[in-house]
Image (cartoon, rainbow, N blue to C red; front, side):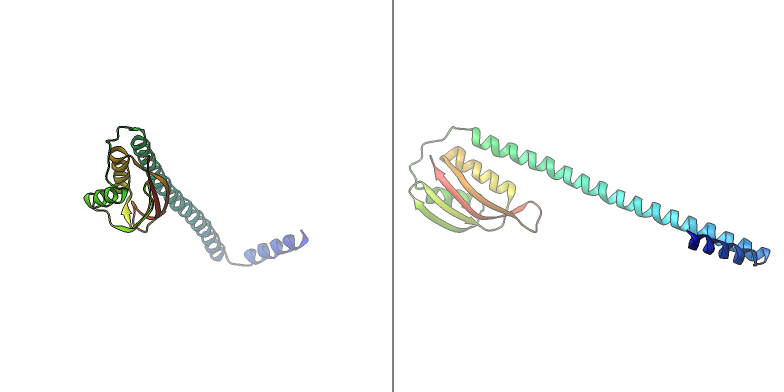
Length: 166
């Protein structure tokens, strides 16, 4: 504490050794410095608050979109009206993929009722519509799926998709 008191006394002595106009100038500079610090702090806080609001809004939009997609997925799994189909799974998968303009990177039959599929980058909504069609019209459902996000918004990469027929 003694060091701070000595420093304070030296500053007061230095201030009092200056002329009246220099003392006013020092006070004016001190006020300007305090205003500068306050404005800088306020500006920084305001900018960070605005950025946080933007991020929150973006996350809320993403949450709404995800809830909509979950509802679509749940809806597609609830419709048991499947038309009897005697076509092979690979034929059905190929024809529905072509119809939906989906590029199959890999199609690997495992058994008569089980096929592994790999897809190139695909719009998530397009993927969900295709899976819903396979489920509702052909009785083919996804038993396992490995999805990763792509660099493009709304586009996913399907590394592995296991399709089965009931």
